[in-house]
Structures are given as structure tokens and as C-alpha cells.
Length: 288
Image 1 (cartoon, rainbow, N blue to C red):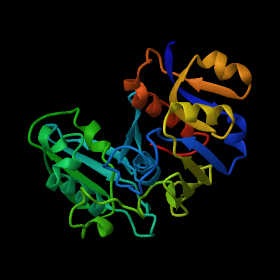
Image 2: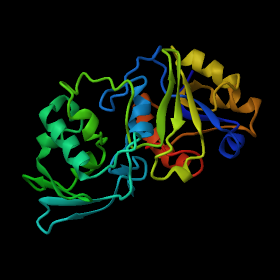
Image 3: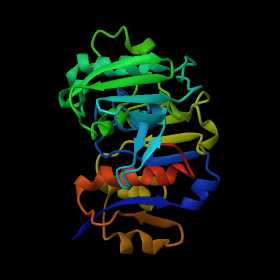
């Protein structure tokens, strides 16, 4: 039986327009651990990346579009060895502290000191130095011309210097009570389900239409599919066999899925999710 990678949405109109709580599938790897370090992978960390922490720009993996986020603009020097980024003003961390260039410079230097966190390999590819120009400008200096390195630089999740500075080892830090610039805060947490609550300090909180995100744990696709069929889940991503006959046919007006062209394998999951994030953010929530 052919499996199709899909993004399933149940009762989509009511979710967009009226719901204060969104139930969604983030992963199917079993019970959660309370780990919201954005540089780790799996489980609860999926929500750390985007919901809680943010990047300088959002690069849409489906369209290639570069969308301003914590930064509003960037400019290359004439020799393409320096990249200056302009940061967004009036951004706060979820604990009320101001976000500025010090946080960005600290984040990149931390990653340099702990290569395990450098998942994009920026410092190996030629990033030479990151310096503060002023509170709203940061300069990235390269040792060699590489105009594609911006995709790695812009995709780094920025963390608060005032929280991470005193960590003995950020590679083992679990950030059980995470502080970020993102749209959501950690609410209640258990190994079986946790919630994210709307961040009152978010720099574009007026665009966040869902107050609470509820994320239950699933041990596999079968249990997740059943929850979707029973309308216990509003929004999710997973493999679903024979989707048209099993899922859509039962309620075609309120059930749907989106599949990018030419993607029918697990390796396409990230591309598919990135493509949807921007589409959903215009109506529902901000997740990058």
C-alpha cells in the first residue's frame, strides 16, 4: 500500500476563525522529555524551534523566500566578505528583557565555542568573526567568499545572553523553563502532553490567532491516525496510507491535506513543513 506524506487539517475553518486552543501532532516518537534546548532534535524540541525561539530571518524551504524576522534587512559588502544585519527594534524576550545585538553576537560565539551546536557548520564553512556594530546592527565577517552561507547564518536560533551566559555547558542544557522571543511560552508539561501559551511580550502578538497549543505524545503513526479520525487533533503531519478513501472521504468539507509536488518520502518532511508554516502563519499562528 503506497504511503503518502501529508499535512492533515481537521475542521480547518473553525480552527482558523474561532478556536482558542489548537491540538496538534508534533512528533510520533513517544513520551516527551522536558527539553527545550533549540539545538537538540526530536520530541519537545520541535516546538522550541520556532514557537519559543526565533531566527534572524525565515527562509522558506519550499519557495526560497527570505522573510524578515528578528532582523529586518541585510547587506553584503562590495567584496562579499562582510554581511551586516539590521535587527528589529522593540523586541523583548519572554521574561521582559530587551533583545539586541549582544544576544546575537553571544549566540554565534557560543556556537563557535561548542561546535556540537553548530549544526549548519557555519564556522567550518568560513565564518570568521561576528561583531556588534551597535544595538541594532551585527556584522558577520567571512574568511572566504561564500554567498550561500547566509542560509545557515539566518537559520540559527537566537538565545538570550542573560540566561545562557552562565551555563557550564550549553550542549547539555535542557532549558526546562525556556525564555525566547517567540510567539509562545511553555504552559503545563507532562511526558504525555504539554501546552504552549501565547506570549504577551511577543513583538507581533496581534498576528497570533491561537491562544493555546496542546501537544499530546504519540508512540506511532497508528495512534496518531486514530486521533485524527476521531477529531481529537486539529493539525498534524505524518504518514497516512490511502488518505483519500480513509480520511478525506468521511468528511470532505472539513478534512484536507497538502503535499508539495514530487514528495512522497520521509526525507520530504522538513520541506513540506516549512512550506506550510508560512501559509498557516498568515491566518493562524506564527511558526518558523
